[in-house]
Image (tube, rainbow, N blue to C red; front, side, top):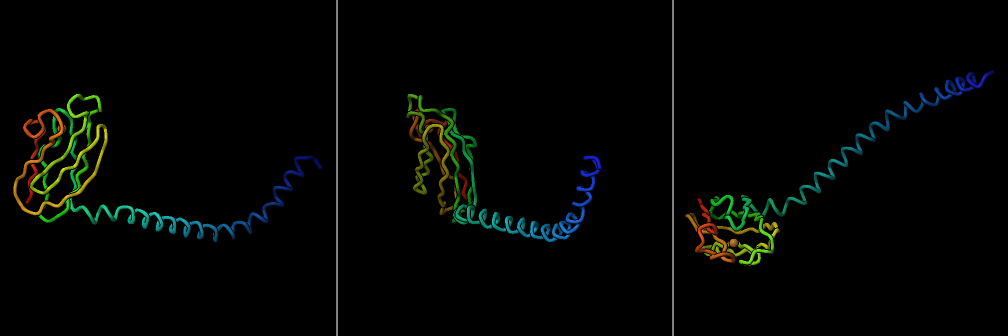
Length: 157
Ligand SMILES: [Cu+2]
């Protein structure tokens, strides 16, 4: 018997256990699918738990970029009585002589005044209580509220 025959027999000999393994394979496939489903359920629950505070607290959302060249967009919309989440992106760095790169989002009509540090992103919420058009502005930098670049419009319907 050559080493090849021995090898071949050993392979054939292993075929039988492979068959029983296949039988196991079908059950392990099921358990793999079950494990996969369980993982999906766990992920879905985790995602729901993670998002719940945001979904509950904000019924609408707006993302605003602010820099010395102004707001983008400069007009945002919200619904009266509904919470709005503002994500404010401050594009300026701390080396600005005027205000050190800080900007804020102020809407005196709803007592909103949220500062955002240079190169930072912040999300905050507020609830406009009455329909109308309101001025929002930054009053930290370069002339603040009086600077047309630092002004925007909040439309509440
Ligand atoms: Cu500003």
